[in-house]
Structures are given as C-alpha cells and as structure tokens.
Image 1: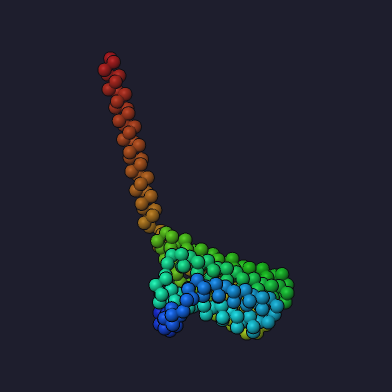
Image 2: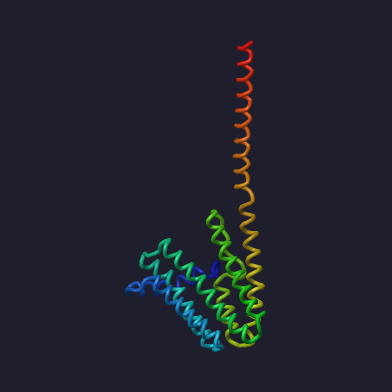
Length: 229
C-alpha cells in the first residue's frame, strides 16, 4: 500500500542521498549487507527483551535497504543480479527479525505466542512468493493491505511497549492473511482467460490433426483393398 502511494515521494527524497553516496566507494550490495547485519543485532536485542534498542536497530536496518536502490540508480549499477540479491536479503532480514520476536514472545507468553509469529512469517513468505510467481508469468501481484513496508512499520510500533508487541503480531497476522487473499484473487482474475483459451486452441488443433491422419489412413486401406480385388 505504501509502496504504491508513496514510492515516488520517497525516491525523490533519497535520490540526493544516492548521489552523495555515489562519490564514495560503497556499492549497493554493501548497503544491503549492512542492513542485514543490523537486523541480526536487532533480533538479538529483541530476543533479550531490550525492545527499545531493538527498535533503534530495526530502523538502522531499514535505512540501508531504503538507500541501496537510490545508490544503484545514481551509479548506474542497477542489475538483475543486484535486484535478486536485494530481494533475497530482504527475506532473510524478515525471518531474522521475526525470529527475535518469536524468542521474546515465547519467553514472555509461552509457545503459542511463538507459533503466532511463525504464522506471520509463513504468510508473509506466501505474499512474496505470490508476487514472484505472478511476475514470472507476466502478471501483476503488487499491492495489498500489508506489504513489507507496512510490516516493518507495525513491528516498530509493537516494539515501543512490551505489552503491545503481542497484539501487533496478532494484527499483522490478520492483515497479511487478507493481503495474501487479495493477491490471490488479483492474479487469478488476470490469468483466467488468455492461457486457458490458448491451451484449448492447441488441443483442438491436435485433435483435428489426429482425426485427419486417421481418415487418411482409412482411405489408404480402402484404396489398397480395391486394387487387390
């Protein structure tokens, strides 16, 4: 949701920062790895119960992820390899952060709270898979109530208070589930007509060719019998 509505405004703000970073020897991949290391620190801090420190480190982990794209564009280093690397590290970062939350909530509230967080992780991975699969088919699965930016924001809100984090995870599970359903029907509706029609046409052509071959074979047999007679 935020990605679609505020993406251009955010890019306009971070573009000058990317131009400044271009003057250094830092690459977009370096920024991506910096964000990953910060997420590990955040997960440890959250797991140990120092939620405010964890909140600070989550923000620090999000900043490099925000700037690596601006640096890639400013330095003309945008590539498929970089996009793949960035997307992969995003998934690792999400899993690490939620792992820290699961550790903390499991200690505070018991095993069921950890299962709640892993449910959030599973549905979030499904959302990412839906988009990747849709794009591989030439379709669009962007959008929804709870994309990655919204999940990070809601996590930060939950880290403000110890008692709020559990309910933030409950709300996140509800919203990511709704997002997964939204994306499913969005892709389903896009894919409903053209591929099925193309498959039917190909099947009809194959059947017609088979029937023609059978008719030609029967005619050939009849012709041979008449000649023998």
